[in-house]
Length: 72
Image (cartoon, rainbow, N blue to C red; front, side, top):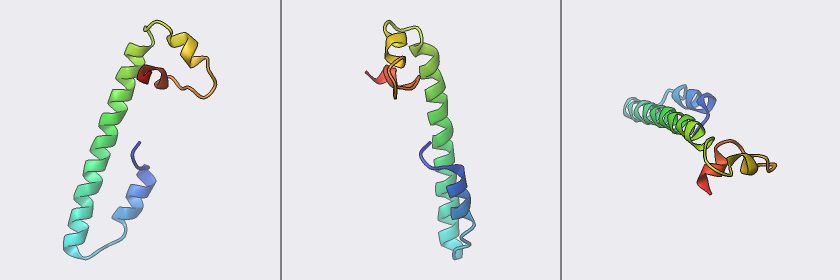
C-alpha cells in the first residue's frame, strides 16, 4: 500500500486549522481509495498471472513474491 493505515490515522489526528484539516481529510480519503484500487489490481494480477507459462519457476526464486513475476 502507498501509506499504512496507521500513518493515515495519525495525520487525521493532527487537528490542524479548519481549512488545512479539510484538505488533509480529502487527501487521506483519496489515498485510501487509491490503496483499495491497488489491492484490487494486485488480486487480479494474482488470479491471471498464476496461469502464465513460467510463473511457477519465477515464484520459486527467493525474494520474488506472487505478484512480482507478472512484471517481467
